[in-house]
Length: 308
Image 1 (cartoon, rainbow, N blue to C red):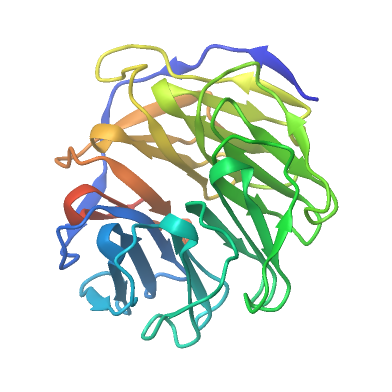
Image 2 (cartoon, rainbow, N blue to C red; image 1 turned 90 degrees about the horizontal axis):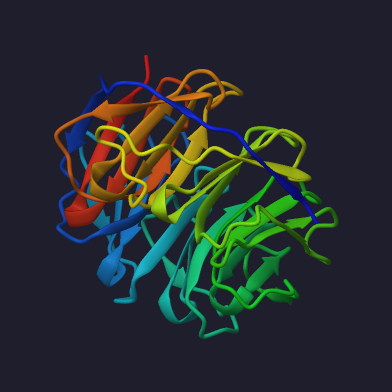
């Protein structure tokens, strides 16, 4: 069980960023986005929509996913092998970089929200009712891992074949040191719903969630520091923070409702709200390089973010 510490965040004035809208070719809400590199990216969302780009988002094209289920997450293990997850246990797999998608049998009807692969064969997905599924053969077979949680799980990340984290509703943070054979609970003493988790290395990690919830760990989750943003100016504690990514130990980004984008360059001691014209909720965030990232969200919104 982890401990929680409380530490106030500094909140500094908004700064403009280069957040350039891209034409996704769809009005569907995009729930997940993933770029393997600065050229090749994929986004998924409502109605089974899948869009892909091979030129850094200058052009996006729809791909046939063969489903109308809401898709919540997408991840590529390499340039060819990718997975998308969604409602009713939906699992889709591609072997050709997202041109053709085929269903895989997840063995569950629970909604699936988060997906993470270490290689084209080894991966995990998480979802409703504490669901954690693991594959060691590229998704031909999925095994249920006992999470010990009943809460909805929204995100999962593994640092290697043994060490992983999963987060979800009711303040749930789960940790494994054996590839998911056993999961233990870490706590922030918060009942917030955590929508995302990101560890830059085995010690330094973040979780973000509803009503501005933001927690940091410097020791792998044994202790969590409350970094929830104060209510000031354009910041609202009622704003749900939906995705967090760090490009190195100091530089990080958070996106959320109403087009919220925050940036830190000092490991989260100060967060700068970023001014841009988009007010659509942003549900997806990806940084294939330290210099470029993409966010996706409501009404087919895709933003290219230039960090330097």
